[in-house]
Length: 144
Image 1 (tube, helix red, strand yellow):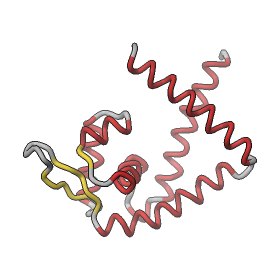
Image 2 (tube, one colour):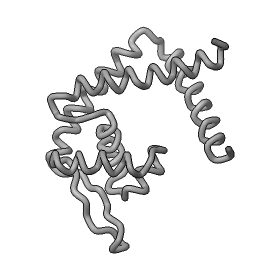
Image 3 (cartoon, helix red, strand yellow):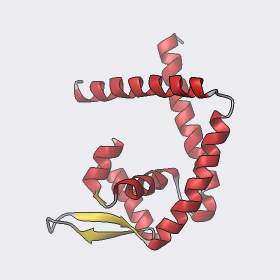
Image 4 (cartoon, helix red, strand yellow):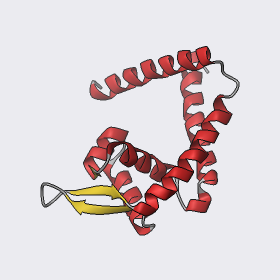
């Protein structure tokens, strides 16, 4: 496999392994990695519509809808009327906020474990490279 292909293959594998690993760690909270992403964004940004979440996370609205429905059933999210009567905003519940604190600790320990062998300089360089790659991917997405 050529170097560019190898890099992309490793990124895809890494993404899947991280998701599986966090799914396992979040299992006692009946939470999946995709749902965790929504909780994380809602905690950081406050209430958002399904479309805003889909745009922000660069995922399909149907995937956001499924995850929000799951979070609603678990009591982590409620949907409130927005400014437009057709729009609903997802809002975290008190249950979600308590869960978030523990899951954030779990996710932080996971990140620490994965990045433990890197020096601060290496982490900074890696963050820069990933930011550049993300920007290139976003540019490709917007200009096919």
